[in-house]
Structure formats: structure tokens, C-alpha cells
Image: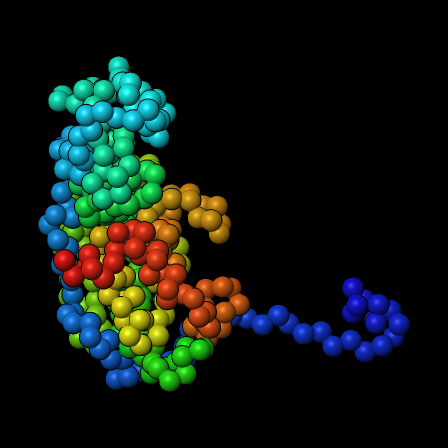
Length: 315
């Protein structure tokens, strides 16, 4: 508006363009790309236990529950019936060995539910042998996701991020191709080797295009926009810790999922899965770059919420 008024008055107007985000670092030669210190190995293999789906729901629930003989006069927050009465899933779900009046307490957080309600919740999820408390989100067991197969590379480049002038940068490159969504019981993945100058996690489907265990629309094609995606961490102690945990999250298929893009509204596409990454190298105009003093702590908290922590990763 000011520019229009000045122009109408015959005064000179200097129009400036909005600054553009600096998404990528300056060009880097292959000889300058180095392994990340303290992060061993060239490739990671998918653990067999990650591929075992559809574990017996009753066995999984009982593994993490302690039976409660005299439940309190409180609501079960899954079915909203009183714990002292039968589960709201009575007559809806029948499972051998689980009576609708049985109540259990989760061992670590202590929240109580009908066993039948937890069986129903588990049966409607990823069925990976883990259980997540619906009240406090505590994770029991090892949570895995529905990330499609793809490639994760990570290496060191000789450039610094804003706010980290004295350190080089860890660059992570994710690459996931388009594919077909599938229902549960998808085959596993076999690892491939990466370039000798990078650390690479690359999982190829054993059969053509079997993506993840439970996707929204099995049999329908999904898109993978914006790949390869480049992400950045400072090469300091905390940055390397985040990298190690991101590797664990990748192996558990928690970094991406298939859903609806918050940016474009496109459905049936590969999207981030609640673990934020910095994709802007030299600025922070979009909120996805540096400087950001709280980012490393925030992403560690997000990883912990997914059941990925340093203590768990070392176990």
C-alpha cells in the first residue's frame, strides 16, 4: 500500500523481493564427503523381529499387563464402561481366553483397562508386538511403523550450519520410490550396500513393491514427492546422538508413513511421521532450518515419544 501511494505521488519506489530460503549447501566434491565420526558401519540390516507381524493379541497384552483382582470404580478410557463391569467390547469382540470382565494394569505406567479392550486396540493397530498406553502414550516393547522401503544415507560435509560456525555438517539423504500400498503380512526387506564414502541404509523389497504392513488403501498406488530429501544436523556430540537415534527410527520404519500431506492435501503419499527434520541448510525462513537453539532437544523428545531413546537403542 505504501508503494502505491508513493507511486501515485510521483516519488521513486524501490521494490525488494522476499528472501528465498537456502535449502542446500555449496557444491561438495566426492573427496570432501567423509564418514560421520562415531557412527560405524556402511549398511544396516533389518532385524528379523521387525518383520514378524500379527502376533497373538492376547499374548502381547498379557505380556505387559498385571491382572487386577479388585478394579477401582473408574472408567476404562478405551470403552468408557466402568472397570468393575464388563468391557464395552463384550458381544462385539470375542477372543479365546479373554473374559470381558478381566482388568489389567500396565506394568510401568500403572494405567488400568479391560484386557478385552486392549486386545481390541492392539488388533486394530500395527500388530508388531508392542503396546502403547492410550492414556500416557508409554510404549511397551519395540514400536515399528509402516514406512515404505527406501534408502537412507548419511555423511559429513565441510560446511557449517547457521549457529554452528565451528562445526561441520551431517547431511542425511532419504530416498523412497513410489509403490503400491499393501495389507498386513507384507514380505520383508533385504539390505544393499552403499557407497564407501557414505553410511547407507537401503532396503529393497524381496518381492516387487511390497510396501509396509498396514497402509490406508491396499492395492492403490502411493506417490513419493520431493525425494531425495536432504536433512541437516550439526556435527557435535548431540547432533551425532540424534543421528544414531534417527538410524534406529529408520530401521524401525518410523521416519515416514503413507497418509495425507499437510502441505498439499494430497492423499496416498509418503509423509513425515511426527519426527521433525531440518531440510533448510543456510537459513530458517520456513521454520525448517537453522539457527534453532531448541531443535536438537525437541527432536530427541519426539524420538523418545516413538520409543526411540539412547538407552533403548543400546539394548
